[in-house]
Length: 223
Image (cartoon, rainbow, N blue to C red; front, top):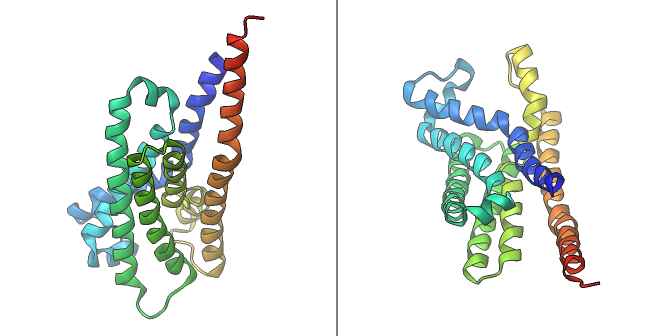
């Protein structure tokens, strides 16, 4: 029981760790915009200041609340708080998507690179995922709701792991990495995160549910 509890807590902690850099950067951006303290290489963001600010804040909320939604013990013990955080999670995801689309529209111009195109595609996918998650829970379909929340989280935070590669490069060189290679890594990380979420939905969750049912069966067996 103790080992299972530690494993259940470990998954949300791991997710927060993987999204830690984007979460921190999002909160920093939220403070930098109203205080006019953006670094020189990011001054162009003042063309869409509030889109950037809300993108940062909602990205941080989305990254923190997502793992909390997946924590089974939290969901069972604090159902009302789970529902409240779930509503904030959904609103954050919608604002994250819309603000991302606003910034892409402002800076994309006539030259559409691979990263910008993927941002548009996955921002729209995040909106669809949020809508499907809401419609599922309203219809009482918990498995489908859980699946779309997982998919939405993977879409919204799918590029977070790349920060562990690009952020150190930025710290060393002082210049944000750019180019086709970075675009390919960016999109590849996004697709990998979504694929990993799909594996969890289709294989990991059913396996755990089967193991739980088997365990309950043997505990209730009088023999």
